[in-house]
Amino acid sequence: FGRFLENPSFGYTREMDDRLHKGFKAWQRYRRADLEYELVMGEAWIKLFEQFQQELMTMAQKGEKIESLEALVNLWMNMADPIFLDLFRSDKYIAAQNELLDATMIYRIQQREIVEQVLKFYDIPTRAEVDEAHRSNYTQKKEIKALKKALADQPDFSQMQQTIQGLQKEVKA
Image (cartoon, rainbow, N blue to C red; front, side, top):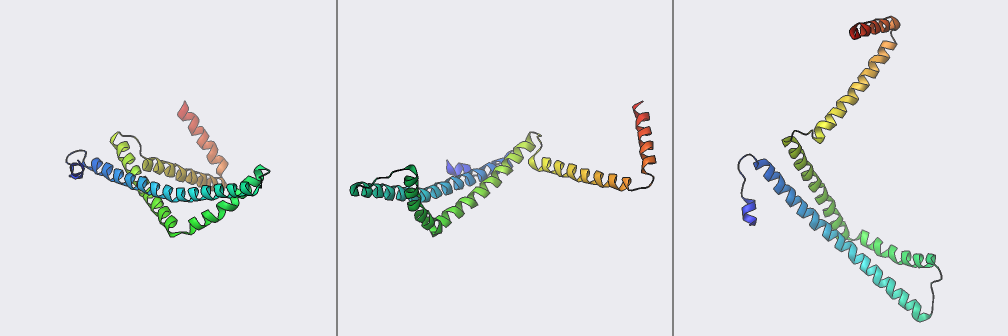
């Protein structure tokens, strides 16, 4: 079945099939990278829970008690900080985080390309088209503001303004 999916597509949907295939591969890579990252983090959490549990058992055997929630949280934090600091400095964590970030970005790019193509297919404005419209509106607003300022600086502006208002009244009539 995998070889069938690898065959080149033909016809009208060829480009979309290719994008979907690339998108699926990117999603698989992202999920794999996320799993690896979660495993690395999970190992640290397991180590922390084991050490915390061991410390609580040691304290109980000595007859020591934790008197407040603050003392419990402080014990937890004092044990968690070095464990996670060592983890965040490790090559394994850095590699897992790097792969996750890379896979996430590639997946998001593929996802955006698929959505853009679907929107084009159904004649719905794409993100790029909407961004361009907003950019154009912003530019036009800036230009109009600059023109108004330039006109306001002209000595005979009030006369031009009266002429414009007269023309507007004529157009409405």
